[in-house]
Amino acid sequence: MKQLFISILFITTLTFSATAQILEPVKWTTSVEKISDSEYTLIATATIDSGWHLYSQTVPEDGPIPTTFSFKGNNNYSKKGNTKEEKGHEVDDKVFNMKIKYFEKKANFKQRIKVKTTGEFKTNVIVEFMACNDSQCLPPKEVALVFTIK
Image (tube, rainbow, N blue to C red; front, side, top):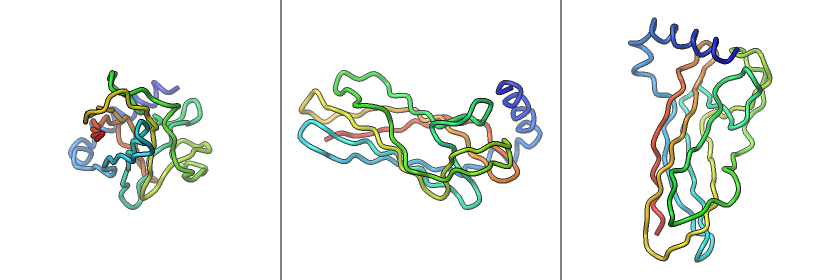
C-alpha cells in the first residue's frame, strides 16, 4: 500500500512539477547545546510554513513517510539513545485517513551525544521528511544538516 501511495504521489508530483519545485514549506536549522564536558545535545529545528505540517518519526503502517535522521559515522562521538521529538499534535489526518502525529509551525528534534575527543568537529546528518497540507503532500525530501561541536 505504501509503495502504491508513493507511486501515485510521484505521478501527481510530475503533473504539478512546476509548482512542486518551488514549494519548500519546511526549513531546517541546527544548534548544539553543551550539557557537560563530554555530553552535548544536537538540536534540529524545523520551521514549517503556515498551513503545512511535518510528520512524526513514528507513523502508522501505510501512512506517510516518517521523519528520520541518519547520522553519518564519526569516531568523535557516540549517540546516546534515539532522537527525541516534541509532543506535536495527534489528529485524524484527512489525506491518509488515519490518526497521525504531526507538527505545525515549528518542531525540535534532539539527539544526545557523548564526545570522545577534545577538539572541535562537525557531524553530518541527513533528515528525510514529508510535508503535507490539507489537500496535497510533497514527495519525501532529504536535507543535509551539519552540527558543529566545540
